[in-house]
Image 1 (cartoon, rainbow, N blue to C red):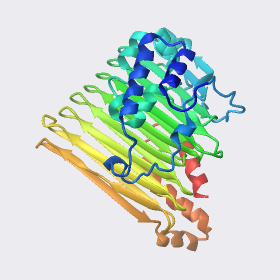
Image 2: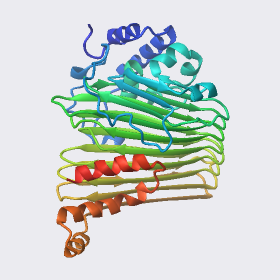
Image 3: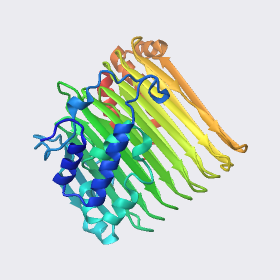
Image 4: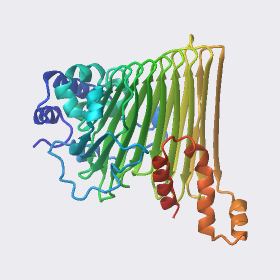
Length: 431
């Protein structure tokens, strides 16, 4: 078996998955881009605060085998989080499907919900049309190209024109062998609607592990998508993600992101407001402890007039953890009468933690409303003292302050089960 990232490994993976010629050629072209693209360094502006010199990328290598049997997959993965019972459930271990269910009602609606390998094999016209062609592209960076060459597993959802998916969809990845390259592709045609929960997790282990993922959300004209991403990998995982949503005319995207796990995260998340009247709200929560390093790069690109974007990211840090948030609102010359907002709030629970918050605007139109806000502050000891003076133990008081800090972004999450899951994990990390 080939080891390391090589052209031979690309061919071996494609052959093992019995892929059509077009996907094999796609992978090989992505490999060429990967080889021609230098590894990012701190001299590159998007990576200035994230040093990859400790990453032993080629020692990790691609996922070429049939996937681990996974042992015991945690019961919470794929559990019911929405009020309405999920109409589709997809649980994968190392990119290989272990549980798959889809309701007859969704099938009758023409909704397609399956793993990405099945989509490439059974729905080639859709897969070839949308896979890394309209949202994320292999030219977006070294790790985007690596993903294009070695992706494995992930979720495909297609909702036809004017169909409101009868029930939510839920996918989950459990990583065991330390090499995952999952791909999420959601396509909503004109007037379609869906709710999707996508979660990643693993246990902590010795040695470096890698998750190199892509998320593509295509929201057609007049469509509406609620997409929730919950990440709770083990503390030995290095995660590199490229995520992009495209929102058509009068369409809506509700995008929720929770980042709790990994040793290091570098995540590029962009929303493209492509049609007049398009709307997107991005809500992010993260909690870093120990020596975790989270680098979250967001963009809100207003490519059409009369568009609205609203981003709120909140994070708490303790121990020697560090976070970096870099945000940009961009308006093209013809993108008049847009409303763009971004805010990042950070709460430091200990003096040894650090947060860098860097908002930005790039406005080429003259009739816009674009604002940003950024704060980094230590926990208010007066608030803690006030609670303690009422007989509340210090640790409980700290938890209450942290809960109050996250409350504004929690209120934006439209699914109660998701709010409860995130809240429980935050309190667990507070200690």
